[in-house]
Length: 472
Image 1: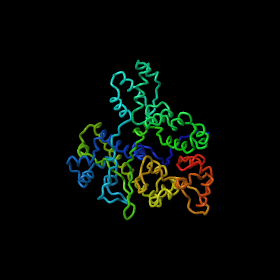
Image 2 (image 1 turned 90 degrees about the vertical axis):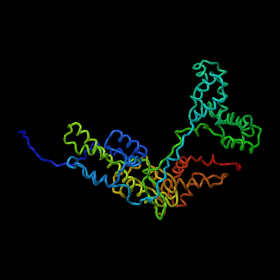
Image 3 (image 1 turned 60 degrees about the vertical axis):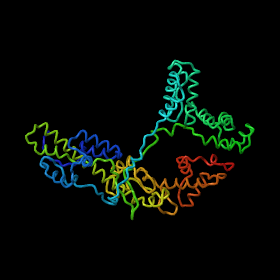
Image 4 (image 1 turned 90 degrees about the horizontal axis):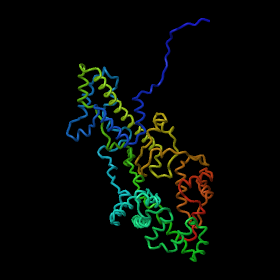
C-alpha cells in the first residue's frame, strides 16, 4: 500500500484564550476594592489611561462630547476595535436605575482608626512601670499576648531572654494582668476568668470557687452536686454560674482589627415606588484615553517601529481594560437585578421568605453561563432593606414540602428553627424531634439529623443543655 501526501482544507472552531480575554475573566471575581487597586495600578503602568474625575477636580475640561469626538478620529485602520461599544457614555445603568440626583453615600466614610490591643497595653504600661528593666519585661510580655488576650510564652523564656529574675517577671505580669480589658495576660481560660472576678472583687466568692474547681462541669446536670459540695443553695449556685457565663473568655478580641470588617457594598438596593438597584461606583476611577498620547499615536507615522509598537500595545490594553470593566459592571448589574427579582419576597419580608436558588436559575434568566454568574458573585456584597449580604448568600438549596407547594430554602428553615428556640419555654426546651414536628406542621419535609445539623450551624445547644431549672 503506497503512501501519498494530500492537501485538504478543514474548517474548525475553537476558543483561543488570549491574554486580554484572560484579563477580562480575572476582573469578574475581584471585589470592589480589589478592582479599584487594580485600576490604579494599571493607570501607573499605562500612559494612555487617566481618571476623568481626577482631571475634573484639577480644573481640566473633560467634557464627554469632546472626548467622543476626539476618540472617533483615532486611527481605526490600525486597530480592530469597536469604539461605539466602549467609549459611549456608560453612566446610566439599564434596568432599575437609582435617582441620578441622589448620591450613593460613601460607606468608607465610616472607617476610623482603631487602637490595637498592643498599643493600648503599651500605653498602660508606660503609666504603670518606671524602670527600664520593667519596661523591657513588659514590652516582651505584651508582644507575646495574642489577639484573644492570652500570654503565649513561658515566664522562663522571658527570664532567659531578658536576663532578669523570675520574681521580677512575675511582678510585671501581675501588673499587666491588672490592665484593661479585664482578663488580659492570662495563660489559660481559668486564669482569665479568675482575673476578671478579681477585678470585680469576687475572686474568693462562690463564683471563684466554681471556676477553680468546677470549670469543666458547668452543665446543668452537675448543679445539684456542685451546690452540695460547696455548701451552697441551688439558687446561689445557678446565680454564680450565670455570672461566670457573663465573663469574657476572649478579652482581647474586641481590639482585634482583623475581626473588625467594614463591608462596602458593590450593589445598593433602595426603596422607592419600586426597588431601585444601582452599582456603587464610589471611589472607582472613571477611565478615559489620554488625548495627549492619543494624538502622539495618531501623528506617529515617523516614529520608530519599537516606539510605535509599544504605544499601540498600551493603547489596545487601555481600550480592552475599559471595555472589560464596563462589561463587568453590566454583568454585575444584570445578576443583581435577577437576584432581586427572584428574591422579592425576601426583600419585602425578611429571611424566612428567602427562596431556594441555584446559579443555573440566574444564568438562564440573564442568558449567561453559570461560571460567569459564579465569578461575578464572588467577593461582592449587596446592601438591601434587610441588611448587607454577600451575593452568594442568595444561592441556597431547598427542602420539599408535603403539600407539593414551593420548596423552602435552608436559610428560611434555619430562621424558623432560630425563632422557635428563642420563643421556647426555658424549662421545657424543644428537642430536635419536636422541631421536626413543628416544621412538618408547616408542610416542610425534613429529617431529624438535618434539624440537628441546622441547629449546630446556628450554634444552638441541644435541648438538654438549654434547659433551665430556674428563671435566671
